[in-house]
Image 1 (cartoon, rainbow, N blue to C red):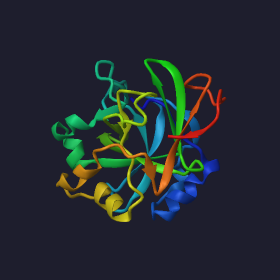
Image 2: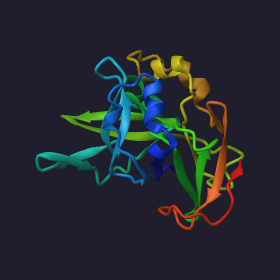
Image 3: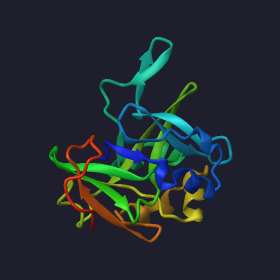
Image 4: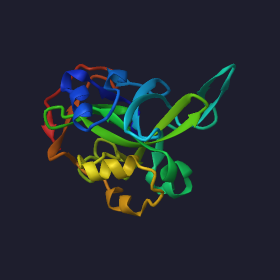
Length: 215
């Protein structure tokens, strides 16, 4: 489960977004240890051009007066790749989530932070839904990678390849998902940068307890 991540502008995240031709980078919500059910920034092309928008990190919502809140019965911060075929959002409303790191643990213990290269920015692949004027989203999770299973045995987030053709197709309106099948396997590189891991004092903390090592 991917349940905490960083969107740290010190790592050049806004520049990374601009380099990919994504509009409205000024809309980005920056911060470390972004938490489930909070507002985060996503990239969609629902209005034609790829643009930054803000969404509640919890795919299924329910009414809360005049607004919306995370649905109590459906914990939906992640979408498992094995169930993507059942989700209309996989065909109709795919998104990207800009990030610079994420945190995992093994059964709630021994939390670690994952980063690529020298904290290279990247995109999680995700799904989104619209609820009136409100957006919600989830991060797609894959099977654990053999090299990361000792840190988190359940899953590994789907990372978008740093490839303009993939990004355009992922955000585009084409409902044919077959071209994405080769990417439904965990990859420990992003844009050629290797994956690193570093232990932290606790999942929500930014203090480290050991060296940063290549996975």
